[in-house]
Image (cartoon, rainbow, N blue to C red):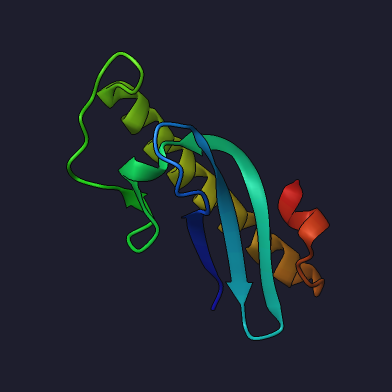
Length: 101
């Protein structure tokens, strides 16, 4: 079964970091691509793949922005799963180019 994870590689506090989408389907397929979503690393948990519970919201990072990012990531995850199911029906295998769509 395929799995999708959202990862932030940077640990630098106070600077926006790129979120990466990791797509794993069996031992043969393990792909990672950057996505156009950026978050503050100190607010993100790679373990839970979501924002940490204790965030100090301010003018730079608002609660609404957090909700928007969570919605965008959830929608992206659903989209990739749907595209993967369509790809499987054709018999093709996922590639990095496919994931970047």
